[in-house]
Image (tube, rainbow, N blue to C red; front, side, top):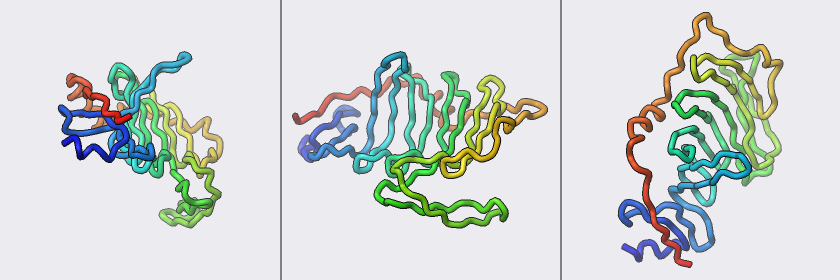
Length: 205
């Protein structure tokens, strides 16, 4: 079994040594499943994040936990940049913020993005933008009251730019509507009693 790990410069073993995480190839490039641990520093809380690297770039869904093991965020990545919806929760699992991102392909000097035509419903046109190698705020950003589930404020972005005056965009329903917990949070809370994965260092240095 150990010979199958020979291609990796560094890794950590889980599941009684049957599987690996945090894999680095001989060039130091990250691959596969990773658990990234960040300690508290200068008053900023520490956290752990779990997800997949493809050729040193975050890809797909990543989950963020505080150092007590509570799920506090679900983020999505493409080309190593945030893409799509990101959700953040309080320690009770209630939604407190929802963001929307558009990832740009860092391998291109310019990128083409389809943008909805504000004058024609369900009509889109191409926009070519200079690629700064990052994500753009794109779509609705919502800020919630975790206690009631009501939306406190909404901001709408178009390719990184805040649209209009959103200061009065807060939704105030006649009866505060409780936002149900995302299924990922419910599933995590069911498994919360399980111990964290134990791993051992497999460095070949």
